[in-house]
Image 1 (cartoon, helix red, strand yellow):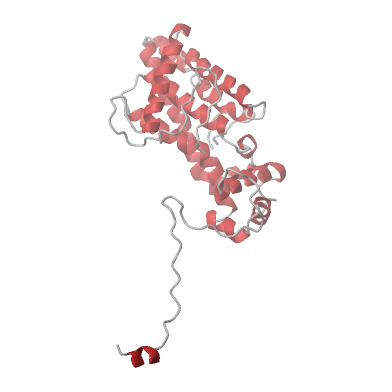
Image 2 (cartoon, rainbow, N blue to C red):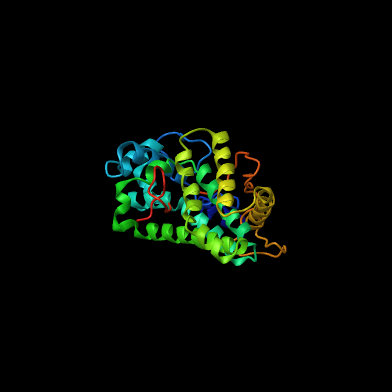
Length: 297
């Protein structure tokens, strides 16, 4: 190009904006907040669930609006709908936050060639940890009258499946431990195992982490004693159950090969035997309609 051509050429237009580069795992940019973040350490979705569970407990499901939830979180109502379709979806998410993980764990345990007593012990330990570590007011949420509506029929169906899974695991354990007649007699009270786990929902409101851990350890021992496991054998059963849960979280079966449904190794194990406070990192259920239980209609 000649010098005259360069001088007469049109100046270059503005450069196109380059979109910001996000690191892997950062996801989509969030919507702007109407107020500063109020619950440090929680994602927006977790904040919504935490606030909603509190408001449902304080003023009831019917009187709580999505606008109230959004205002309490410090976000716009449109941002709430970005995470949940409506108020019913929020409540359904709260209810499934303990049932779904327990069913997934039970399914994995059922696919392994575990001793039936160890298998039940692992399910009880996992379920107790999930319930006692959950940060929501589930002991109140589970008693909302709206749960009887047909809209929540799938949740109740999942609750029933979990209760029946406990029954099946418990009866298999009894069959492996005792002669037929004795196993049949003990099976009459088999639902008490599930009831001990269910009672942990109320235990959340009775004290801090130390009391919850003590209850978890006691409930686990009590479940095994209900099955007729000798006290001297309980530590070994619990240790083997903890190993099974470690395999579940790390995605390996007892032989060390990859297993379907595994969990991230960073999730903390459940030290129920020692009574140490535990965290499951995961976020309803069914059982007897006693105080704080997760009832199945």
